[in-house]
Image (cartoon, rainbow, N blue to C red; front, side, top):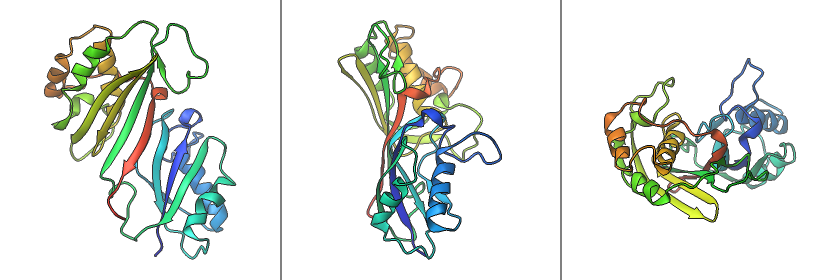
Length: 250
């Protein structure tokens, strides 16, 4: 069995998330990739994705893997071949052959997400699809203080949208950092895994802190409560991007 790993970037605006929704009219990233790979291989190809990004969420470093069967194209040429058929809002950045044991999701050691807030007074037409516009000043120091409560191994039930069953709601968040560059505020999260809507609910909670709706120290209380009615609200999808998926040696 051969196993090919492909790193991807995509604009999620026109897609209903990464994961397939077969039998519906909703187009997803997975379905587009499988369709194009199947055309190239002249056989059905099914892929495994590292993260199931939601509808409207973007990626700069999504990872997939698949078994090409007897497809003879060299692994390093797969990205070039795939790009010849992909729409302009999806790009294969790199392709390599990896051991059969590699699994894009289960082999991942860490994932990094960035949430972008545009904090300028006026709307920016060039940022409207890739950031959440908040036109009045946010207290970034308070947001940083609130974010400082999050790193560590915790039950993140308070930052989980109900609806997707999981074996455990315990995750390790290695980093939760808030920074500012001009009118852009970034919330960077790095962890061993993320629950459904977790990154967007953390962003929504820190935005409440920045607006002065809750004090920074309440973020720790929300985390401790494990009550999803206290976390959030869920920030809009357009501000979120899967930046990177980390692996050990493949």
